[in-house]
Amino acid sequence: MSQQVVPSRMNLNLFKQKIVGAKKGYELLKKKCDALKTKFRVVMLKLLDTKKQMGTQAQDALLLFAKAQWAAGEFHQNVKDSVKRATIRIELSADNIAGVKLPIMHLKDTEDMDSNMNQIGIARGGQTVQRTKEKFKELLYLLVDIASE
Image 1 (tube, one colour):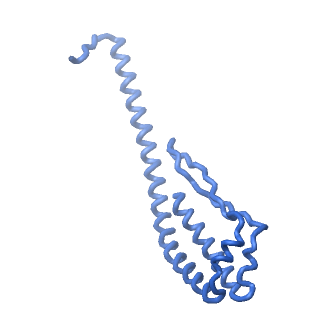
Image 2 (cartoon, rainbow, N blue to C red):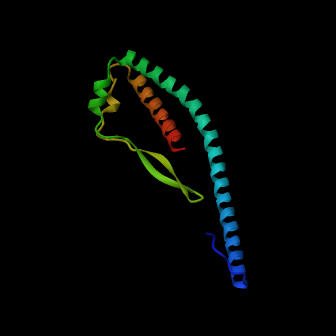
Image 3 (cartoon, rainbow, N blue to C red):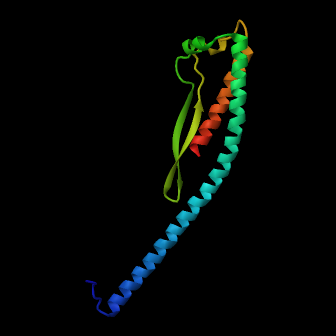
């Protein structure tokens, strides 16, 4: 069942080349594995830090939202009516680590000139609504940072 190899110099050189190719392939895979492990460690450390920040920032943002709701009243419908299109967009790119493409997300912030968001809460609670908007924007940046890791 096994294939018999004729002992000759040509076959000896052929098998030596196969051994050299196998060793080179093993070394390349080892380098790739080490590069991915290093990137994984960096990502895990950064992920732990950002997750800790996420908890406190989400708590602060929701507390500010409750304050804005108390100060400006129910402003949900005003926000829905004043927003025409998204002002924050996500751009995708890829980071190449040893031949493995890892997705990276970047936020692109554009101001919507058609929006009436600055007029929300003019009568009362306008500053609190703006602070709440900025705090939720910071939270969004942090969440996208976590997602792109």
